[in-house]
Length: 218
Length: 318
Image 1 (cartoon, each protein chain N blue to C red):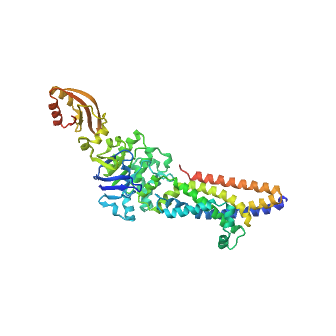
Image 2 (cartoon, each protein chain N blue to C red):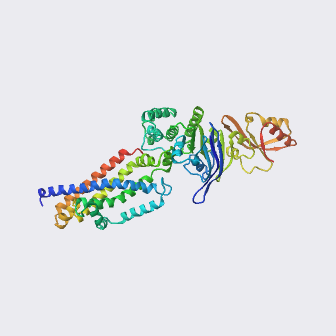
Image 3 (tube, rainbow over the protein chains, first blue to last red):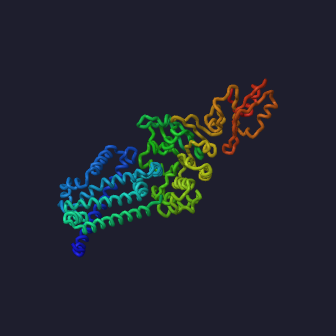
């Protein structure tokens, strides 16, 4: 394949990867953050101890974490159809990508929040803070650098997962590498996509690190 | 100002942290609770603003029984009780000024008013030039000053101090204690502090209590405690080898006699020999207090001891 032929395909694939990763990252942040917060606050000795909720939530998160992504993707096909009306394509791929990344990010959020000292939380309570204030004004702002770093790791994982979404017609760079690079023995396409993925991941990591550093005052 | 009555705290594990504690902190005084770690003093302090809910007993602060309050009322009551912490408990993501503003935000004080109050508070603790700095850029002593400014934001009548100087070096400890003493005098602030450092009790406390195994063993004005026979506080402040050698007498000069030639006049007046076995002298809130262990020998030993008692010296011994 000549470069002129490859360019539009490459552009399309990059766009698809971008779409899948962007939307699933957004949804992961929106869903993973509250779950991570709940994992911490419902703990014994937490702000709102609810051992039963904690146990159930923890178990669900662990199930999500223990499934290989490709298995998860296929296993939840009916659920994907329920949400998006289809099981094929970029939009359909966003559902398993999000479900795969939410438990991952929730655990990262949990770990970050646990790093806030008990004394700091108690100090806020001793000043008469509501529990919700402790979350919004203490736990989250104090861990913002870690939350950003965690999201960066999640985005990189999502780029990797999104390569598998080709298996359900999700498209993207991974799909391109498999179909052209591997199945058609087109080494040129393989090299170009691999280089593109490496550059993409590097850029995201550098950006994420820079933002996290800017936010940290420790 | 703070009245704790028959306070009990039993943890789920069956550990009894507080075993019927009574405490009375009067308005305008600095009250120190002394004890080893595990004695229950930290639990006691955290029960005073109900960070820890007691299993039994009552906590009354400024006439209000906190143990019967609902969530919202308790939060409001807490806004009127300041607290400072061993490791300062500042928010690393906020500047010094924003840390001090935190309790004002919680209390929904309008922004403009917040700004002037924060400036006042930073001026009070001598950190006006650090308003824009982050806690990581401050020394331990400066961090604790921020902690104190923050604790005073809501104009509390009561300040709780949880080992506030334990993480500081001796010089910084003294400057923080001096600040607490100044706030106590200038603002009429009542301070309840817990510590394992004798130095803190010696240098700032009007009253003290000694805790062990969840119980208060003795409590009262420091000078009264010193003058009391068998006082644990006295033993802590003036450590002498225990047990006392047979026949020896321990003399406590609690009422300023430490500045007088008591022993030499004793020897001149009575037919006794005095052998000094050990002792020390401390300045307690401006009054010299001494404790001496001596061996007395001679015909008039009994009369000599009576003479000492007559001069207000606490005599413990044979």
